[in-house]
Image (cartoon, rainbow, N blue to C red; front, side, top):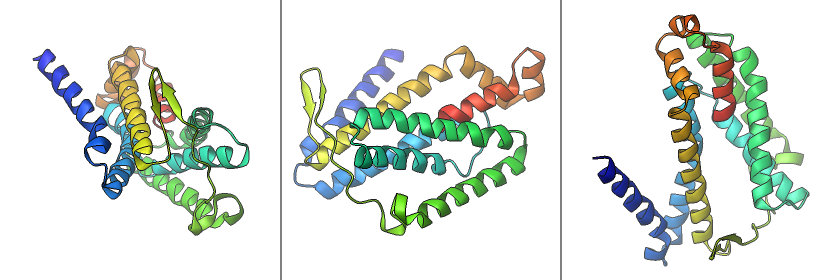
Length: 220
């Protein structure tokens, strides 16, 4: 059964990677699938936060925006390459999650949900009104195209939609792998214990707040 699941997963990944090749004259479809993958990535983080730790955050996309603007501004203003900009974006978004998580995780149940919703609305308002930095409602034009990305003998060009699709697919698969590793680690088992019963987890020596904060930072 495990081998069948592995083969099915491999077939799904190969099929997803072949989509731009099978649809060479459908840039709209490829762009739509790329945007879908870009939404799946933060959803994986939210699944770690809610599915593993039992923390429902309604402002999670705020950290996606923080990371996105960080990468875009570094590439546009400082001339950073895409890999370095993405790494910096992840660090900045994680640090923002750390700052937000410290006070928010002191709250429980619906209070935590309401506060995270408020955080998301506040961040959205900032992004929508900081015209000089984020471009406001008009967006942020002028972000340069990434340089070609070489993986072994395979090079991804970003002159066509298929390059961005493959980049989004690789990032999604990498994020899924990280979540899979976390879920099967002692840290992931501790998060599951916290989700089921915080008091019982604490009685077994689990630092509940530290684990929740770590999950919040990683998800961000």
